Length: 267
Image 1 (cartoon, one colour):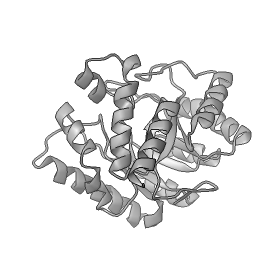
Image 2: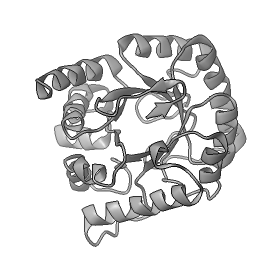
Image 3: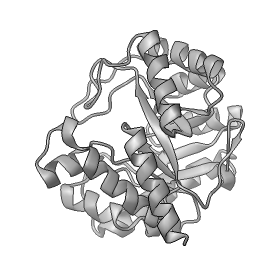
């Protein structure tokens, strides 16, 4: 799969480093809001093994407050431009709004990462097609009224895939995300993490994003700043289950765990 100017080996697991340009993200809100801090953190994540940087300007933690398109654009566009200027690395933009997406893509973003799987904003798919970039379709829904949880998740993702394909987005530009932490109970988050092979059966690469999330905090009874080991455990599971991308805050620890896991399973 090609993202930006980089070809990603689909038989490997790659690390996506998180760069939140927000005052209120659940784990690292406010830490990287200045341009200098954002660039230094990006440089460190690349040194630690990140293969792609995911930039977000609106927190989507539980109970988050939506911000205007203009504010989100003002947060992410300058950082995207600066990261692309200073580093040779693909950049993903974490947004579900087409106006923000178009501004970010015009600024140089290489991938659309949509937490609503193209279902919130009907113009998101056309933005991806217009700029000819890949899309990550995350599972999400407005309720938790599942009849058959795992099959319902697959059915919801098929709808997102159909939306992408109807817009002319090619199969080789689609990534699927199980949506850990979104419209799911703790038990459901654990189940979908343990059944990534079901998403793989749909025929697309999978991105897993569990980093520091409540699934880990509730399971281990730990605060957000003590969830590195729990995240690493889920990254190892993701690697074994065939996830192509792992979206994480703590790049070094997850990168090393994944490389070690790959060495063992490929031996």
